[in-house]
Image 1 (tube, rainbow, N blue to C red):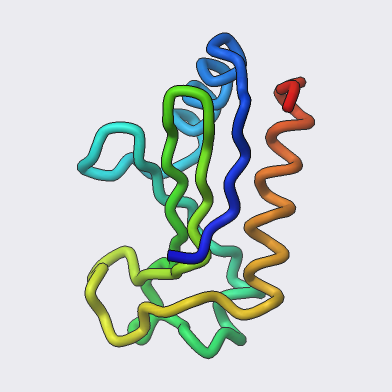
Image 2 (image 1 turned 90 degrees about the horizontal axis):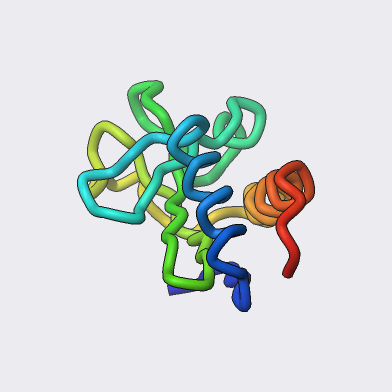
Amino acid sequence: MRAYLIDEISSPDMKKIADYLQRNAIRSGLENLYWVQMPEGTAGEARHGALDGSALVFAIELGSHWIKLEFFLRDLKDLRSLSAGYCTAKQRDFIIDYAHRFIEELGVKT
């Protein structure tokens, strides 16, 4: 799996990240796994766009002292859809920028 990993995060900062994702992401059925919806501008022109207009999402997984943002996109309504696949360069940039924005916003030290 291709992904962006940020590690060596303190426990208090991991709590901040978990709280942030509770408020700003979609909870999955698994503990410590969240879905983040791609903005329309990046999903609409993607080679892996949701077929019926449903949300195209990427996963963020939380570990004990790390977060992993996956570069694999899925259709939120059908996670095994044919529209699932690795992100484009523009989508990859959005995912990395998303991580950097909330880390800065929360004052997380990495």
